[in-house]
Length: 476
Ligand SMILES: Cc1cc2nc3c(=O)[nH]c(=O)nc-3n(C[C@H](O)[C@H](O)[C@H](O)COP(=O)(O)OP(=O)(O)OC[C@H]3O[C@@H](n4cnc5c(N)ncnc54)[C@H](O)[C@@H]3O)c2cc1C
Image 1 (cartoon, rainbow, N blue to C red):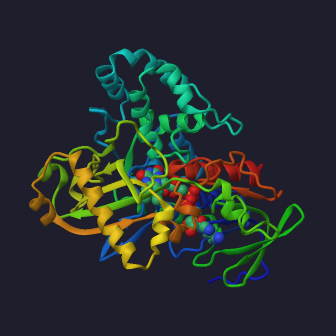
Image 2 (image 1 turned 180 degrees about the vertical axis):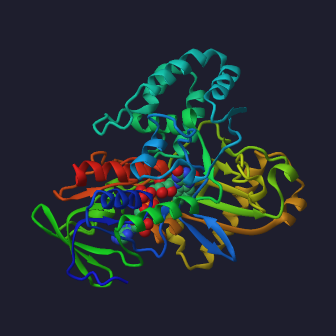
Image 3 (image 1 turned 45 degrees about the vertical axis):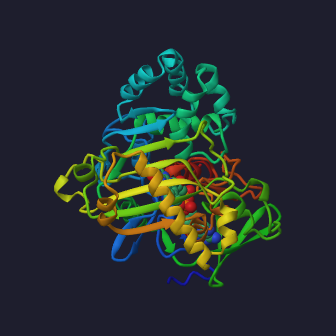
């Protein structure tokens, strides 16, 4: 570990998730003496990877959103690559094949070609297609990244164009699961971001998964000259009036910096500050948490089972409820991802094992009450795993149960407690606080926020957040 005690930096970045990595690279590229501090032993945060039983697992990757072909102008993906000086081919992206929304008796297919979604809406909701097109025109012209955009209700806006509440729900299912911290609604700017990310642009996956992204960012970070301190978090931020004057790390090291940019979350960051109440922001902790199951299969999902979609968003309830469930999990709606179903640029190097990931809403407090190390927690995980897998398989072409079970070669599952433990997110809330801080400012003049709680979510969003907050507050 570098001996940092007493050192001064131009910029200190807290957290080596996607946003912190991007911010540190950007700052160091512009000659700022930069320190990046991460509590965990691995980079990537909510989108890192880990080893278990000899296998490499992505923590969270279903899809990288905002896929566009190389050279596309004015697109978030090409913009972030340019700002971090990364070549398009370095991400080694493979586009999705085709995804679907299963809800209210319909199966609405969509892909990275928007016209498929448009034709599917025209088929399933013929009376609504004009409104759908007008809504798309509004959202496509919307300046969704404006930091002062009003947080109007997206549901209210969508309902002005679409009179069938079941189509409104249908459109909200993927956009909520992939990027909403608000129960049963979204802020309009966030809805517009997700509309573009998922429907207008679409999904891709680096050939080897998220490691391709973290590896690329790690190399850029090394080349940039930023100093990196892993396995040692920020314990305390010392303050004087309206300034953050020094940072104390877990190992007692004290460093100073002109400016600090934190990706740890808004309440999480402010609770580190001297003079701030220990329960600061308790009314702004995200209420939405998730469970995810991962099933590794000794079978090819498409060839052996006929499972050919990349991602299926499903809802089996009468209406789509996107809110903190009463029970440990709410398996009435969720996401099924089959990472094998991307269009591999090198099919001979495609993953050998099949993989099925299933996600649904979960209640953090109920999991917390079981206690992480208890047998009750382990049993609840087993029960929830079985429940989610059963629900998911109803949305996939039928496979004989004994054939399916025989093909299972490994499983894993995370709960909201896993997220809390590995990333420090309060309430295990992947999408962070309910109210975002778009401008990235805090009550302290030289302490800023980036990442999830600034408001840009997902891999692409978090990277853009790190870049834009570094540009705005540290490089302007
Ligand atoms: C299961 C799951 C599935 C997902 N699927 C997708 C997907 O398919 N596509 C997609 O685009 N996005 C997905 N996401 C969301 C995406 O991963 C996140 O939105 C994004 O990675 C957030 O990045 P971030 O930098 O804002 O925050 P984080 O990744 O949370 O990074 C913050 C970092 O700060 C560190 N930290 C916290 N406190 C301290 C401290 N005091 N000192 C030092 N370090 C600290 C944490 O350890 C962490 O590494 C998924 C997330 C999960 C969990």
